[in-house]
Image (cartoon, rainbow, N blue to C red; front, top):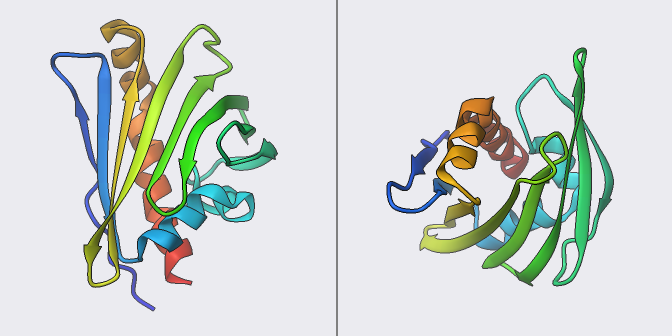
Length: 159
């Protein structure tokens, strides 16, 4: 089976400390949503290739929370947050914290839009405290993890 890879657009907003990520998938919103909310699927695609992922807990519902760890030969990288609003097939609002920088909390909003023909446009906005924090997040290699993660998500959705 051939998987179509769409371009991932990552844009730093010039006016507020926000990053906007846009990507289309060749799957309906219900499948893309499930891949973001089912921990058995999340562990198969989230993050860059070459890192192992362990989920400590992942309760993707309004009021739920999560914690997962990526690891490689250099160590472990923990991430955690809470789900503020979860609406099936359309919206996830959550906080996101890299435990290596525990004072930096991002507010993230994921919107799924049905664009027809069984396809979905995903738009994620990630708002942080300052332009310095936003620029540090971008400089951390975030782009590689997002692009590779969404390529891996294409593979999960194609199964």
